[in-house]
Length: 469
Image (cartoon, rainbow, N blue to C red; front, side, top):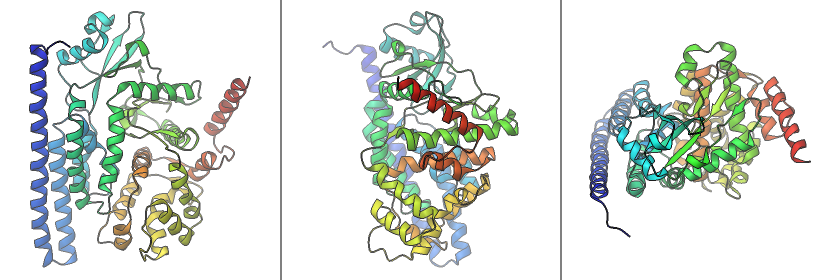
């Protein structure tokens, strides 16, 4: 092996310095929040309930501001860890929710020369030699990489995702930092959060996400499964331009989430909502592989409400027995069978045996997120989603005893993120539909109840006939 070049050595030194700075920043953050939490507890001793609630809210807001300020300056695993906090932010006070939502926005892109160096290292030549045309200004920048628009030598317009260099060398320590962040935030909101389980799940998923070859394989699998689908579009991967740190796929010239919200009429909003819901349920129940990152930036929208699904870096694939361990809870929950719900929750690891909780209290607490499935037709709203999560996280509320006893099995972490991410999107869209009946199409193989369902059934039948030849 050759000796490292001067450029490589300088880059390695810069990466080590960046790593040390990131670790120090997280350490200072957790130390500050621990100190302020200690002060909070001292002040709360002599306070009445109203004053303690006020103190708790103030602490949550300051913690959110602190987390967003520090993580907003970072890329990679720590930034992704902050984005994954989105599954609890709807339950925080509005001010805290607002600052944490800023972590979902595009981050500062890397310099054009740095992106070009990654292309050259991975594809063997600078971008202007590899591609017929290359836009050095990224179309989007996120936690792990950024996307450039390009044209291949044979004239195809493509999206080229380029990974930020040096992430794989810091993943271990960054996950340790993520664990500190989650422990800190669990003090603010989800006190029974299984921090170790969450980090273990993040560790497994992030190791995959840093290898774009795995993401390319997942995206190709989804593109093939949904080829010719009446309302789901997944861009094809361009394999000859894809490597471990570069992922190239078809360019889709549709609207972003923000553009769609600003321009879509009611019909388009309702169509998009049903498409997202059906894609999520179909992947979970029929495919057994689902995208674990419901970030609205991972969807592109047509003016009629059609949806293109992009970014398959954080994909969850059911391990043997996982799905079977979680799904049995649904039937007794929908039947309002409190004893059955508790028994299944104990079996699945949500409750430890001997907890002594009242089954009706448990049912009342865990059924709140499923309100949409207890009526024939339901309208998701932002107030509904925020109200449910706020109730689930209210440490001094009527369900405090249940909340403190519950744990979150690692296999449920990504699914929970998907369900709440989807619900938040449906709330923003004001989605109204027969959600229980649509869910039963996937869960119980019931007949379709909407035009989109019937179109999908016809497509599945046609695919079945073709593959059966």
